[in-house]
Image: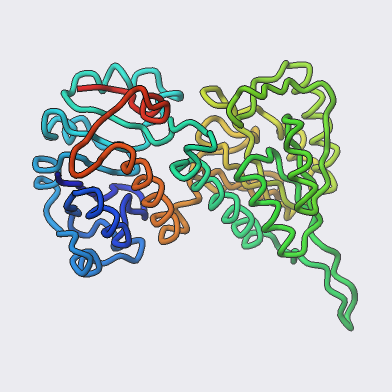
Length: 359
């Protein structure tokens, strides 16, 4: 059985790294990688060859592989070249685009979307969304620090005392918690919002202040995701965000609701009243953004405030991001492939959740 690793068109990362070769062999598979697939994340063709993963052309990967892996979805043309009954693994986000599953049904292949892995204890080692979100939260703070025209930590110097930066984090999921931890390590004073009551203890354990808006809907059965809130609650939240934003230098916005447009938390009025030189990093940019002025994949300035819209900051840490994605994917494959035989057992809750199209 052959595992094929494709080169990404627009990402720095690669789906499977050379370090996975031992586990690939243990499952009874051989692996091939598209020429140059790992170069942008620091993995040369030679490093794959040294680990008995053969660099070949894209055509060979598509036509010869029984299992094909990429991070971003490939084109319909590429899917049409895959072997009948092959397993294609990627991040297809069917909860964001209703057309994904009907489009996949045209192809005689099995498709697993890694972003549909359930967020359960059993599937933790396969949770790509959490892996990437953690890196995005870390990078968001570094991006903010790079654009901020002052310093994060308090410093006492002969020329005077420099006050610490004030950072507000919107959403205390995986990305938000990593942003809190990173901002604290840099010496900032940090506050955080989240609609989930369970986040309060985690926020406080990292040394941040939890800012609570009363009356939030909190669905414990939502698998760790935030849930849609009433407009009345969102209005109260926006008012409190504005109050806190006027005192903040940095906002890291991470709040998203799975399958819905991101909640608007930072209004244009708020931005117009923030201190010039402040920075907003909006990780919810791809689903509409938490900030009224966010433009996806762009850095803009409004009234002296820098607004960075980027939902894929994990790609800026391409080396470690590739390794984590690779580990998550190999861990998933270990429940699918035994002794060189692929079994898509839909009695397994993880496989059932992730398998979005069947041959």
